[in-house]
Length: 357
Image 1 (cartoon, rainbow, N blue to C red):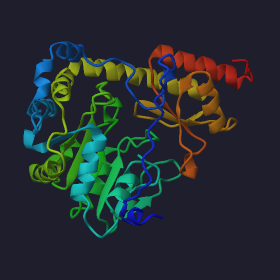
Image 2 (image 1 turned 135 degrees about the vertical axis):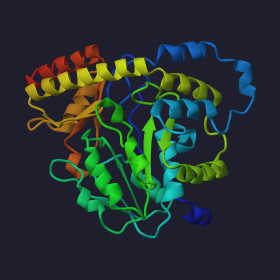
Image 3 (image 1 turned 90 degrees about the vertical axis):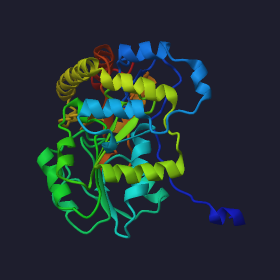
Image 4 (image 1 turned 60 degrees about the horizontal axis):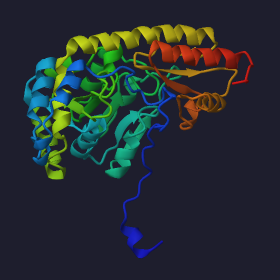
């Protein structure tokens, strides 16, 4: 090792889902929304003034923050925005998890959590999901430096009832509890009402999934004003201009268009429930996902081989080789009805033993 390398911070990075250059493939591997953003976003995009790009954006992203606050029924001081939920969660880790005690999160969950913990030198302990891949609230009732978990969980898609979330928050009044609601809009009940009772709660959401804005990177946090103020202090000490002008303007339009939002999420939910039935007919073990993806395994077909066969056929899904408990599972994003029809046509042929395609 060279001398200068001894002072380099080295971490094992998060590995995002593959982004194929071939636009003709069926892309069901990164939980993107298969439908376009709101028409109001498209209209606002056409009306953007390119000359304004020479100016710095509003560091407070006021237009976006105000739209979020109005839509979700909170005050603007309860909202923090950033470049996708990854950005706002990373800032929450940096701000809130400063204890010498370990933070707690599930062993099967969003695989960025341990990356941030390692990057920021935060001690952590993973809590095993039960045999049904469910979070056990009792595992989070011990001394800790903070708690984070998604609801619905990823990559399982399973939803925790609000009463269990409150059980965890109530049992940990002295630390920050973060509920990552990236997929809550596809069938879950948000923990937002709990903000009125608990000042140690943060809730993260995103515009990437339910509002079809993965390409703009817009995430937001809800919390009590004092806590959001602390996170803003860290943000302004790190990068004052995280949100660019187009993202602020277009994100605000997407948040305001609730009718289009509901139409899209309902289409995805309908397709998901149909997809669960089709997968079970083909012999897959398929949990009761409340997200925009399903998490499946097949007792007669190894996941890695099925993943490779699907990719060869131009259908991209996600295969997690680690941890070992889920190495025989695939996560399949819910696409359009036509995309899912193509997936099932391939699976039906594959399960029959016909490998001609």
